[in-house]
Length: 611
Image (cartoon, rainbow, N blue to C red; front, side):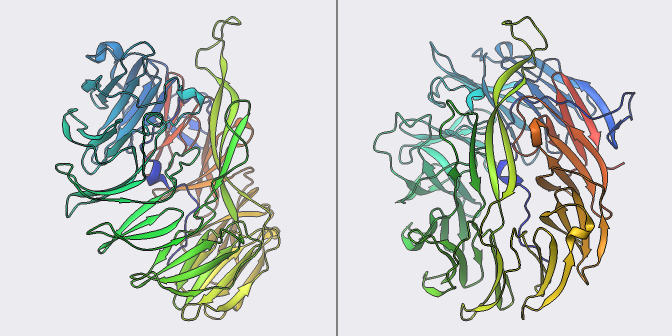
């Protein structure tokens, strides 16, 4: 069984990115250990030594939980017991103190680092790196300057992930630090300089590590921290010896690397396939791995990245949309591209020879669609989704808890205005449809336009059938012929209009405005319709567990769902400042999806998902 693409946020791209400070107000009854949080059971409640006003995050397996403020940190173990705590000024040899900018980097093999940046207005900036498991300083330095734009505060909407000028390479357990004249590779555990090169300038926008050759392919971008200092900046892609920093070749490229508004993911991808490098930026470009020469390119618009408001000053929100264009799909000898025409704004599919870039065929032109987010090859058919939802990333200026409690007016108070991140999916008015293309000729094999108001993502089963819905009905089609196999009246389930689809065993679960309804793939009969859950705009598959999210009206509610029967396992509601882009304010979930951590100031609650 195969699916097209999950709607869950691509967690690997942002895993380990530090969250804003997190607080939570939990939906739970009173009582001792083992009490319920919704229908979830509380494993334990713990207390940080400090209030978590900057970071409140858990490791992927939940064996360490970290809470920080500007000047201190404390950590708990998997049982909620204190491991270490302390003030940064006492824990660091260079007396790193007020660290408005901090991020956590978890290591794949266990452990991790707390990166502290102390921007000093009247002195030399300080950097310190602490070991997350012991709290001990691993190294500190005053050598690295201009890692952030001067005067930028993290509360003012700055990136809460890695610094633009600092990139962690998990494969080498090292930091790449960008300076005005060079890039330096630093051992993450010791701070020792491994190598330095002046042939690569700027931040690292994207990299691919070649383990067999111990080489790095990476592209640069002009970071905000160094932007004013970099003169004669040029876009570079380099092949570099990871052992000594020798640049084996240097190639230039045209285009601007942007970052997503909330996740801060660079809108660029790199692949190494055989002896070729594929760059996905403003189209697709292919380079020879051995010498960096460009072999071929197809230029088009990759993603919308369109904003609906200007800068942060004077605005109460900033919003951009993404996930409008399907990623390329590759076969042994061809690549299929969803192309947005730059001049006439039409869209179509192109099939290109993988080795030469030669156009094999182009589909019919498609008018009136804002997005074409999914493409799939099934036998001799290429299935294209026309229209559908888009991902919205938004920063809203909201009144949130400061974590300081009550107080006299003008003396701190209990709230402050802060930029709060939101990620959600929504439908835009556009042309919708399902198109099947003959892979040999590029001609339309069949087409369905029974989607007046909206079209969900599609799910492909065994390369034979495709399932897709509109707001009120749910369909199945035979892929070779286009014959409609069934048409189910989804509005009869009384869970509202369909918003998404989830592939689950022998069923397709239709996430809707007021709940869930599941249909059997074999014949479209309804397996269940769930209790009412309103306002869900996101779903996650974490491990083997499914979660729904409602973030309306400044709320952040996470529901755990049993997809076999549609029942709600439990829910956690959190409110307050900050939160991770994955799960929002005050919430973190272990990588296996078995435990939820909820934060509220100094308090931490560990919640078991499956009882």
